[in-house]
Image 1 (cartoon, each protein chain N blue to C red):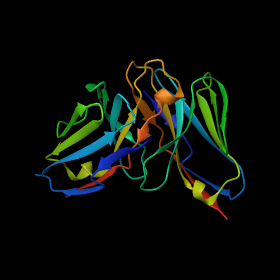
Image 2 (image 1 turned 90 degrees about the vertical axis):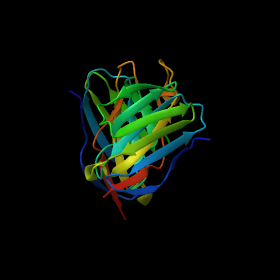
Image 3 (image 1 turned 180 degrees about the vertical axis):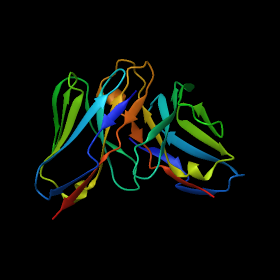
Length: 111
Length: 118
């Protein structure tokens, strides 16, 4: 079976750093994505990792360890607008284009 | 242009109605997707089209019928839906390269159609 685990909710303070973890057990792996989704809106792409290591993009960084089935999304200098759900998604190596999503982590940024 | 558009934004339909959801992209993507998302749940894949051919059907009931008339358009025809089918329906597109890197793998989502079945 396919399984992606993320914490349900997290709270952090404006200006701080927060790390959102994701663990996965999937039959095949061909990349891991992080998406941001504000309530009532579509997911928007944040980052993509297919090799082990850290990918940095502005205030957002994403890390992957394939041997551990583990990723995290690091958000620095938190802003109120970062309050959203963060979805971890794994693209399966099925020869098709199947991506499965975790349940998402709802992040609340407080002043 | 990195936009995926969907119409309508909202749809209310009875269980005997027939309606269609539409999705359009002009990014040259050859893979297009339909997802269903219930409140506070992740998107669930329904269908994938690759080069205008259906490549994945996630055992979706036949009351949902996808159609890909050309490389820019994706439709979802709805007939005899149930109240539990009420959800946000998201369309997405991506490049269809088999060995692609990040830009080819990334799915771009439309704003969704919020469907209510009465």
